[in-house]
Every structure is written in C-alpha cells, then in structure tokens.
Image 1 (tube, rainbow, N blue to C red):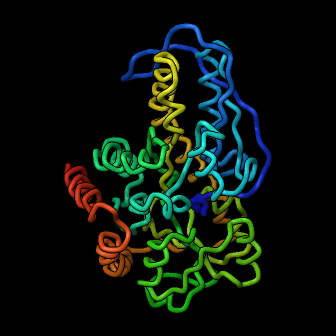
Image 2 (image 1 turned 90 degrees about the horizontal axis):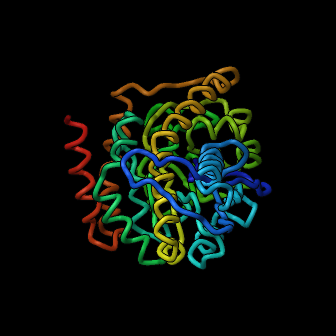
Length: 350
C-alpha cells in the first residue's frame, strides 16, 4: 500500500465521524463491562474512503459505540484529514490523537526496527499464513512492540492488507526488467535498498503526486496491494500488474501509550477485546476487497503472474538485504529478525 503506497497510505480527504462499542465481549479476552463516561477518541488512518484501513477504523468505531452504550464516540479520519502520513506519528506521540493505523513504510525512519516488514520474500507466499504469523509471533508482538513503546506509542495488533504487487509501464518478469527502472517507494532506507538490489532507481515519491507521476512517466512503477491499486486508479495509467507476492502490506493498530495506560480497567478491556475481535474481521475484509478489485484491474490491465522460478530469481537478490537490515537498520543487531526467521520457519513447516 503504499504503506500507502497502502504503504500503503492513501490520498487526502476529509474526516468521517464514527462511533464506538458496548456489547458482549469478543473471544479470548475478558468482556468489557461497567459504565462509561461520555468521551471522544480520535482515530487516524493512512487511507481514504472504504479502503481497508478506513473500513477497519469505522468498524472499530461502530463496535465501541455499541459496547459503550453510545457514551464513547470514535471519530475516524482518513488520510489528509489531520495532515500527511508524516504528521500522523507525531500526532500519535503527542496525544493529539489517541489511535492510528500505522504502516512501516511511513514510520520506518522513526522506528527503525519496523522496517523489518519491508524485507522482500521474508514472509510466506500465503497471505493467510502471513496473517497467522503476524497474529502469533512473539518477535513481532513482544520484542518489536517494545521498540514502539520507546517513543511513546503502543501497537495492539499487526495485520495484513494483502500481498504487495507491482504495477508498471512495461512487463516486470525478471530482475533485468528493473534495470534503471524508476520505482516509487515510501522512502524508507530498506525499501530503497531492496529495489536497488534489483537494479532499479527507487524514489520516495509523494503519495499525493503519484498518480500524475505514473501518468507522465516521472515514475514508471509502484507497489501496493490490489485493492489499493484499483481504488487509487493506478491501473488506469499503468499497462501491467505483476502478481509477485514479494511482500505483504502490514499495518498495525497503534495507540498513544500514555492515553492507553490512563484508561480505566473497563475502557482498556473494551479496546483490547475490540482489537482482538477485529483481527479476523480485517483479514476477511482485505481478502474481499483484493478479490473484488482484481476483476476490475483485469478489464484494462495485463496481468502477469510470476512463476516459482521467476520468484526465485528475485528472492536470490532480496535475501542478502536481510544482512543490510541487521547491519544498517536494526538497533538490536538483528535479534528481532533472527527470532522472526526462526518462527516463520517453524510455522510454515507445520
């Protein structure tokens, strides 16, 4: 996404108000109960309209409204409603907003370890298995979370918005096709290094100007989940989409840590159970959107699906970037990556 790309982040827009929850609890957690004082929480995202992040935030608001008896209102903001993607992490840190959907492509230079999600071919080809790893991994949900907490924010969950695919103005079927190719990234060091390994010229081009840049050739390609490519109409100005599944667009439900720890026990339980409930919901939502939008893109764009042999060519060049991450990005000497690699190996061997 672009990170917006989903890294997804998304295009600018206005705020959309939503609400909260008061109902029975979700599976696997203590049910929230008790009386809730009237209050408003602000929830920002990197996307717009009905894209996955906004759909998630709106569903969160709906559940919180119901379960709080209407006493807690969650106001959701799409991309641009309260500033750019670069403003959002600062707003979350300062407590200007209470909740945010964040993606590593935009916060990777603030939380270095989060760039781990930018490593190509680290996670399995299966989006379902990747979502399972994101949900259960100790390296992610304990060790990586501590890196976020060091700057005053706290991820409550990590989830996938779908596999990342390439769009381009020429076929991309081998690393040779990337030679001197002007590839848009979200601008993190790791993303740029990854595409340089294929021979491309990556550029952290602004999201708001990306459509025009693709249309006039300033940028020749970009990466994002299928739903985002279609909703942003990138397929209208790109001739090809390559189903590479080289990565997943990973998002996290993140809160201001001081705010979260200052909630009452009942309020915190309400937030936690809602996030738990939405973990399976958002997987189905991204699947629905990605499946539906694929048919839209197919109408105007040539679809290229990489073979296992072609994927292996890219993976061979991508794997050494893990050492770049360990040596130049990680602040813990790659310990989180080492642990995550082991967990992925164990979980994919099952």
